[in-house]
Amino acid sequence: MNAAVFYLIAGLIAGSAVLSVTVRDIFHGAIWLALTLLGIAFLYFYLDAGFLGVIQILVYVGGIMALFVFAIMLTAKIGDHAIRQVNRQFWPGLLITATLLAVMLKLVMDGPWMRVQASGVVTDLQTIGRSLLTGYLLPFEFISLLLLAALVGAVVIGKVKR
Amino acid sequence: MNYPWMALLFLVVKGVCILAFFAVNAMFLIWLERKVSAKIQNRLGPMVTGPHGSLQLIADTVKLLLKENIVPTEADRFVWWLAPFFVAVPTVAAFLCIPFSATWIVSDLNVGILFICSITSLCVLGVFMAGWGSNNKYSLLGGMRSAAQIISYEVPLLLSVLVVIMEAGTLSMQGIVHAQEVGWFFLKPNVLVAFLIYLISATAEVNRVPFDIPEAESELVSGYHTEYSGMKFSMFFLAEYANLFIISAVAATLFLGGWLGPWRPSAVWFLLKVYGIIGFLMWVRWTLPRVRMDQMMAFAWKILTPVSLINVLVTGWLLVIKG
Image (cartoon, rainbow over the protein chains, first blue to last red):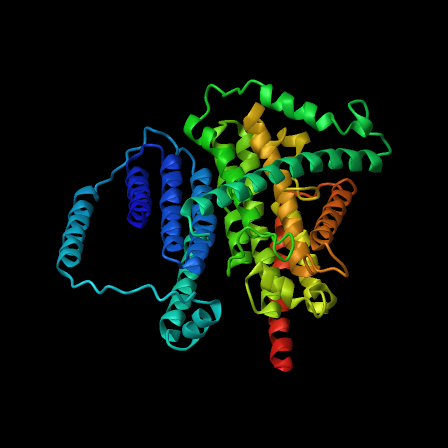
């Protein structure tokens, strides 16, 4: 029963992920990507990580996907079916992706898998907040640095050239 | 609850209750809105069908159900078909975490308020899809305006909710209500500011006057749902009024003490507060004129967001001083 639910969610994620890169219409692609991200949120809920699931929906589906769709609407003619789906980078891209896939498959197949029993403890927000500001402070601060860099970059790109 | 099928049956019954409430509440609100607007404009409103036009709703529902579902020739059928679901389904899902009384809540998630905020943020995509899929200039413009507005007002909305979360120290809806047993939150000055910001941003989130520029009948002929008819249109319409109920219910729970009241039954207190807020929002809608798009965006980013950021900071100080 549990396994069936997992495979259902995994199938949804994989299927919509493939569709999001193969459909011709870029708007349809965005919708399939939204479904992929929703599927990942379902997976978090299924694994009892409610907070993570909710944040996944709030940030990725509600925020980032809305921005994607906004960008599609503001870009002229991007919805045309006549636009080619691939550019000159197709073959190098395929090579890199295939290598990555091979490495990951190798790791997944060979790796020793620890079996962790579900502890039944619901991780509350206080624990998450405390560990973010103590044990994981450095990565946390790095992320804010990354966001700042992205903001500055967006301003530089978006500035009107004189 | 030893039998899995019993649990399943229980879930189905709860789901049916929510769907029934979703539909009946929205129908009632549509009638109420027509009556309130009539009162404010010195008219009578619907009077012919039933006492004070109360059966008008049933007539309207039958009409919407029987109406032909027209698909524009040039519409993007996949997107066009999917859009009403993206608006209606999250709205129904948000009812899961609304505490009607101490025991009447479908699921008291420990991230309740965040769940409601995140699941209703899915509606933006539905509005976008409706605007794009209709293949109509007005719909597209309406969809874009709506999305820009919802994304902008989401920031002050979440920041004002954050103030309440800081005061209550929990994300669970029931926990927030219990934290107000010593005194309703809006009595504290910093939370009162958050309450005002919440009301303004929530009005913008559900596209109501004075922030109804995405639908503006006179310039956009209703915006993103211009091309929809029959059942698909009624899904947008029902979701709009269900959203109005949800923002009012969240406001009542976060700021006005939820189902707390001097005597039982507590669900009555909850509904009184919610419909009180809804009445206030309707009064605002039929009193104020529409604001311009650029004024609206400037107001969100230049006034509401800084004020709510400062409010969060002040709340933090107050909490630290109190220890």
